[in-house]
Length: 277
Image (cartoon, rainbow, N blue to C red):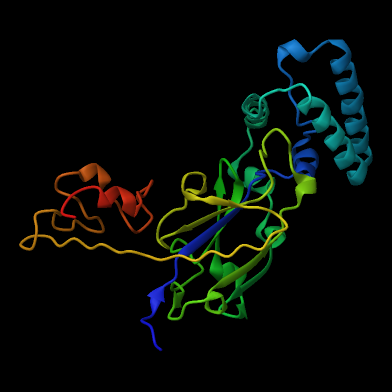
């Protein structure tokens, strides 16, 4: 049986922990990731907090990474027991982080790199070419994210295509979550955020993605529906194309670019709600 060759979609993966604990400590001198609201800066809890915080400082100053991470986990347990909301903790954390005036390169350097996240990659049974196959970008929610088969990747001359279905003819990834590096205030749960999207479209993993749990094997099968609307004289749904863009006559706010250079690019679900169904 033969199939028409089709363009393979882009697959974006992000660790749900945007910054790694040791990089935060040793690159930007974050010795504690917990920033307390005013009502918790006194009493027995605060004494215990200060003691662990001092131990964290000592481990940091001596370069004892194992002790540093173990103490960090104790501190996290202590603070979690106070029922501080994750949203409040994240707000304190991010205010402190952005107060450091870090540039884009420094922010990227605090997050998990590609060679640590992707332990193995196979495309149609062969090892991936990492620089060709993956496009890196920084997401404010998940930190470093990496897109397989991105039309935005300058190192890829063309997009990957597929003509047969099944896992042997697609993409296989082994990903390293590395929970030891998780930072309690900003990582709500352990896992990988995955988004499958059109290859020339910029990825929005928070809005269009799904989670994969650690220590599990997950298979994802997809189908694609493509709707093409003809311009005049065949219908009055679509303007004549202007450059790269296609404009809907009745609902122009739902028109979008498939090239990835008009952000945010809206998904097919928006355009299908427009007209001439």
